[in-house]
Figure 1: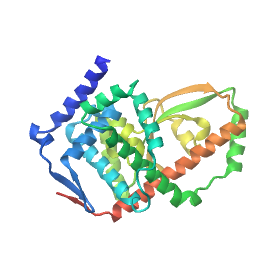
Figure 2: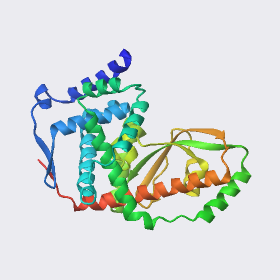
Figure 3: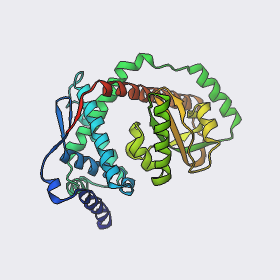
Figure 4: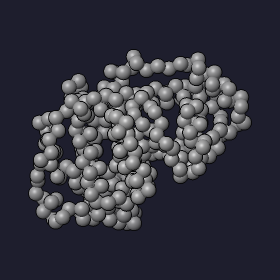
Amino acid sequence: MREKFNLFLSILIFVFFISSNKSFSQKVSIIYVVENTPITNIEINNEINYLLLINQELRKIDKKSLVQYASKSILKEKIKEIEVKKYFEFGQNQKIINGNLNKLMSSLNIKNENEFNKLLAELNLSRNFLSKKIEIELIWNRLIYEMYKDKIIINEEKIKKNLEININDQSNKIDEFLLYEILFSPNTTSDLEIELSKIKKSINDVGFENTANIFSVSSSSKFGGKIGWVNKNHLSKTIIDTIQKLDLGMHSDPINVPSGKLILMIKDKRKVENNLSLEEELSKIITAEKNKQLNQFSSIYYKKVELDTKIYEK
């Protein structure tokens, strides 16, 4: 237990070391204004603490990049919050929020509420702070679903046919890939070349995961671009063909997706027992495809909202 808190205390020290002096953590100054909503240096510092809480790998990037990433993260959250408040009220999702807080505790190997609250206090965070973040994402996802649910296209017959072929071609084991992503949205060919050059340099300098933290517009960016273990049956032929050419640790060239350009990195692969029935596997694939399309719609809609939002830097 003490080792765990020493680890997080070192994170806290690292965060406050970013400040040029102690007064930074006490004196409040406005850094950005989003529409009429100010964002202060204290909020950015808290965002750094939060990001380091959920992804300790961020400690490896330089201080300037960390502050830039935290600023980008909180700006994105504020834009989402302003947008969803036009359509929905807050304070009606506590049961789901508590479930997400429990998942966070589990991911940090924290066993009880007291331990969790003590850790948050060490990082100058609170349960209300985390709850608000979770609720913003929940309501944003609800908004995206309501706006785009009729635009989701699922060819169930085609998926079923391909699945039947794959099942017949396989033994009782199937490939799974541990995938990481960087999603970016260049506006022009020139922007693509500039952005891609920056991303490649960053990957060489600080690695794929830290580059995802800084450059990716996907929600996975907070976790170093980690998608997780993905069953081969859940991937499109284009993606399968791409990643099967990669050695472990290698990344792909940009892949065209509706929300921009996607770079994938395969960190590991394994074979797992394929015990699901055709119907169960079909249901999982359809759910994954719906979520993928909703994530793409989310990126597209966020980009539109961001362009329409007035942001001032003080």
